[in-house]
Length: 212
Image (cartoon, rainbow, N blue to C red):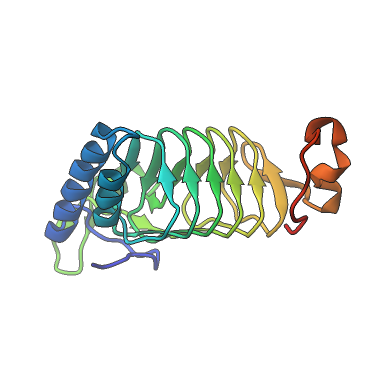
Protein backbone atom coordinates (compact mmCIF):
# COMPACT_ATOMS: atom_id res chain seq x y z
CA UNK A 1 0.00 0.00 0.00
CA UNK A 2 1.28 3.44 -0.94
CA UNK A 3 -0.19 6.53 0.66
CA UNK A 4 0.29 9.49 -1.68
CA UNK A 5 0.18 12.23 0.92
CA UNK A 6 3.16 14.12 -0.46
CA UNK A 7 1.14 16.07 -3.00
CA UNK A 8 2.87 14.50 -6.02
CA UNK A 9 1.12 13.22 -9.12
CA UNK A 10 0.07 9.58 -9.39
CA UNK A 11 -1.91 7.41 -11.80
CA UNK A 12 -5.25 6.34 -10.25
CA UNK A 13 -5.54 3.53 -12.81
CA UNK A 14 -2.48 1.70 -11.47
CA UNK A 15 -3.22 -1.99 -10.92
CA UNK A 16 -3.05 -2.13 -7.12
CA UNK A 17 -5.12 1.02 -6.86
CA UNK A 18 -7.91 -0.34 -9.04
CA UNK A 19 -7.92 -3.58 -7.04
CA UNK A 20 -8.05 -1.69 -3.72
CA UNK A 21 -10.89 0.53 -4.90
CA UNK A 22 -12.94 -2.37 -6.25
CA UNK A 23 -12.53 -4.22 -2.96
CA UNK A 24 -13.55 -1.13 -0.98
CA UNK A 25 -16.56 -0.47 -3.19
CA UNK A 26 -17.73 -4.07 -2.76
CA UNK A 27 -17.32 -3.79 1.02
CA UNK A 28 -19.30 -0.54 1.02
CA UNK A 29 -22.18 -2.38 -0.63
CA UNK A 30 -21.87 -5.28 1.79
CA UNK A 31 -21.93 -2.99 4.84
CA UNK A 32 -24.88 -1.02 3.49
CA UNK A 33 -26.85 -4.23 2.98
CA UNK A 34 -26.55 -5.12 6.67
CA UNK A 35 -28.96 -3.85 9.31
CA UNK A 36 -28.48 -2.46 12.79
CA UNK A 37 -29.55 -5.90 14.05
CA UNK A 38 -26.29 -7.31 12.63
CA UNK A 39 -23.63 -5.40 14.61
CA UNK A 40 -20.97 -8.13 14.57
CA UNK A 41 -21.26 -8.61 10.82
CA UNK A 42 -20.96 -4.85 10.35
CA UNK A 43 -17.84 -4.71 12.52
CA UNK A 44 -16.25 -7.50 10.49
CA UNK A 45 -16.81 -5.55 7.26
CA UNK A 46 -15.35 -2.37 8.75
CA UNK A 47 -12.27 -4.22 10.00
CA UNK A 48 -11.67 -5.50 6.46
CA UNK A 49 -12.45 -2.15 4.85
CA UNK A 50 -10.50 0.36 6.96
CA UNK A 51 -6.82 0.90 7.61
CA UNK A 52 -7.38 1.20 11.36
CA UNK A 53 -10.57 0.73 13.36
CA UNK A 54 -10.75 1.17 17.14
CA UNK A 55 -13.39 0.22 19.70
CA UNK A 56 -16.71 1.98 19.86
CA UNK A 57 -16.78 3.25 16.26
CA UNK A 58 -20.27 3.33 14.76
CA UNK A 59 -21.62 4.17 11.28
CA UNK A 60 -25.21 4.64 10.22
CA UNK A 61 -25.49 3.27 6.69
CA UNK A 62 -25.02 4.12 3.91
CA UNK A 63 -21.26 4.69 3.87
CA UNK A 64 -18.93 5.25 0.91
CA UNK A 65 -15.14 4.84 1.07
CA UNK A 66 -12.99 5.12 -2.05
CA UNK A 67 -10.06 3.05 -0.75
CA UNK A 68 -10.85 2.50 2.92
CA UNK A 69 -7.32 1.26 3.64
CA UNK A 70 -6.08 4.85 3.88
CA UNK A 71 -8.54 5.78 6.65
CA UNK A 72 -7.73 5.45 10.37
CA UNK A 73 -10.41 6.07 13.00
CA UNK A 74 -9.98 6.45 16.77
CA UNK A 75 -12.16 5.20 19.61
CA UNK A 76 -15.84 5.97 20.23
CA UNK A 77 -16.42 7.99 17.08
CA UNK A 78 -19.91 8.15 15.55
CA UNK A 79 -20.87 8.75 11.92
CA UNK A 80 -24.44 9.54 10.95
CA UNK A 81 -26.05 8.63 7.62
CA UNK A 82 -24.31 8.98 4.26
CA UNK A 83 -20.66 9.50 5.24
CA UNK A 84 -18.41 9.75 2.17
CA UNK A 85 -14.62 9.52 2.32
CA UNK A 86 -12.56 9.82 -0.86
CA UNK A 87 -9.36 8.65 0.80
CA UNK A 88 -6.84 8.60 -2.04
CA UNK A 89 -4.28 9.31 0.71
CA UNK A 90 -4.38 9.20 4.50
CA UNK A 91 -7.43 10.33 6.44
CA UNK A 92 -7.05 10.32 10.22
CA UNK A 93 -10.04 10.82 12.52
CA UNK A 94 -9.47 10.94 16.27
CA UNK A 95 -11.29 9.65 19.34
CA UNK A 96 -14.75 10.72 20.53
CA UNK A 97 -15.78 12.58 17.39
CA UNK A 98 -19.33 13.01 16.11
CA UNK A 99 -20.30 13.37 12.44
CA UNK A 100 -23.68 14.58 11.28
CA UNK A 101 -25.39 13.23 8.16
CA UNK A 102 -24.01 13.83 4.66
CA UNK A 103 -20.42 14.66 5.64
CA UNK A 104 -17.84 14.34 2.86
CA UNK A 105 -14.04 14.19 3.15
CA UNK A 106 -12.01 14.64 -0.05
CA UNK A 107 -8.25 14.16 -0.46
CA UNK A 108 -7.67 14.08 -4.27
CA UNK A 109 -6.89 17.11 -6.43
CA UNK A 110 -6.64 17.67 -10.19
CA UNK A 111 -4.93 20.24 -12.44
CA UNK A 112 -6.98 23.35 -13.13
CA UNK A 113 -6.24 23.39 -16.87
CA UNK A 114 -8.55 21.10 -18.86
CA UNK A 115 -5.76 19.76 -21.10
CA UNK A 116 -3.63 18.89 -18.06
CA UNK A 117 -6.57 17.10 -16.45
CA UNK A 118 -6.85 15.05 -19.63
CA UNK A 119 -3.20 13.95 -19.71
CA UNK A 120 0.28 14.58 -18.36
CA UNK A 121 3.56 13.00 -19.32
CA UNK A 122 4.84 10.39 -16.87
CA UNK A 123 8.57 9.85 -16.14
CA UNK A 124 8.57 6.88 -18.56
CA UNK A 125 7.23 9.10 -21.34
CA UNK A 126 3.68 7.73 -21.40
CA UNK A 127 0.68 10.07 -21.36
CA UNK A 128 -1.83 9.41 -18.58
CA UNK A 129 -4.63 11.07 -16.65
CA UNK A 130 -2.96 11.92 -13.33
CA UNK A 131 -4.07 13.43 -10.03
CA UNK A 132 -2.56 14.18 -6.64
CA UNK A 133 -3.78 14.11 -3.05
CA UNK A 134 -3.26 15.73 0.35
CA UNK A 135 -4.11 14.12 3.71
CA UNK A 136 -6.92 15.18 6.05
CA UNK A 137 -6.62 15.03 9.83
CA UNK A 138 -9.37 15.55 12.42
CA UNK A 139 -8.41 15.71 16.10
CA UNK A 140 -10.09 14.20 19.14
CA UNK A 141 -13.47 15.40 20.35
CA UNK A 142 -14.65 17.18 17.21
CA UNK A 143 -18.25 17.64 16.11
CA UNK A 144 -18.60 17.84 12.34
CA UNK A 145 -22.19 18.91 11.70
CA UNK A 146 -24.53 17.95 8.85
CA UNK A 147 -23.59 18.52 5.20
CA UNK A 148 -19.98 19.55 5.88
CA UNK A 149 -17.38 19.08 3.13
CA UNK A 150 -13.72 18.84 4.17
CA UNK A 151 -11.22 19.46 1.37
CA UNK A 152 -7.67 18.15 0.75
CA UNK A 153 -4.87 19.08 3.13
CA UNK A 154 -7.14 20.31 5.94
CA UNK A 155 -6.32 19.69 9.59
CA UNK A 156 -9.05 20.28 12.17
CA UNK A 157 -7.71 20.62 15.71
CA UNK A 158 -9.12 18.82 18.73
CA UNK A 159 -12.36 19.98 20.31
CA UNK A 160 -13.63 21.85 17.24
CA UNK A 161 -17.21 22.29 16.07
CA UNK A 162 -17.73 22.76 12.32
CA UNK A 163 -21.14 24.28 11.57
CA UNK A 164 -23.67 22.67 9.26
CA UNK A 165 -23.17 23.15 5.54
CA UNK A 166 -19.58 24.38 5.85
CA UNK A 167 -16.95 23.86 3.16
CA UNK A 168 -13.64 23.56 5.00
CA UNK A 169 -10.86 24.77 2.72
CA UNK A 170 -8.26 25.67 5.37
CA UNK A 171 -7.06 24.15 8.63
CA UNK A 172 -8.91 25.05 11.83
CA UNK A 173 -7.10 25.57 15.18
CA UNK A 174 -8.10 23.53 18.24
CA UNK A 175 -11.23 24.39 20.26
CA UNK A 176 -12.72 26.58 17.54
CA UNK A 177 -16.26 27.03 16.34
CA UNK A 178 -15.97 27.49 12.58
CA UNK A 179 -18.62 27.71 9.89
CA UNK A 180 -19.42 29.00 6.42
CA UNK A 181 -18.49 28.58 2.78
CA UNK A 182 -15.59 28.94 2.78
CA UNK A 183 -15.39 27.91 6.43
CA UNK A 184 -13.85 30.45 8.81
CA UNK A 185 -13.26 30.56 12.55
CA UNK A 186 -16.14 32.33 14.30
CA UNK A 187 -14.77 32.16 17.84
CA UNK A 188 -12.99 30.01 20.41
CA UNK A 189 -15.02 27.48 22.40
CA UNK A 190 -14.62 28.25 26.14
CA UNK A 191 -16.09 27.40 29.55
CA UNK A 192 -18.83 29.92 28.79
CA UNK A 193 -20.21 27.27 26.41
CA UNK A 194 -20.70 24.74 29.24
CA UNK A 195 -24.25 23.48 29.62
CA UNK A 196 -24.00 24.72 33.22
CA UNK A 197 -24.67 28.14 31.75
CA UNK A 198 -27.88 26.98 30.06
CA UNK A 199 -30.04 25.65 32.91
CA UNK A 200 -33.21 25.95 30.84
CA UNK A 201 -31.74 23.39 28.41
CA UNK A 202 -29.90 21.28 31.00
CA UNK A 203 -33.06 20.79 33.06
CA UNK A 204 -32.63 18.10 35.73
CA UNK A 205 -29.47 16.77 34.08
CA UNK A 206 -25.93 17.71 35.18
CA UNK A 207 -22.50 18.21 33.69
CA UNK A 208 -20.03 15.39 34.38
CA UNK A 209 -16.92 17.23 33.18
CA UNK A 210 -16.42 20.67 31.73
CA UNK A 211 -13.18 19.62 29.98
CA UNK A 212 -13.07 20.65 26.31
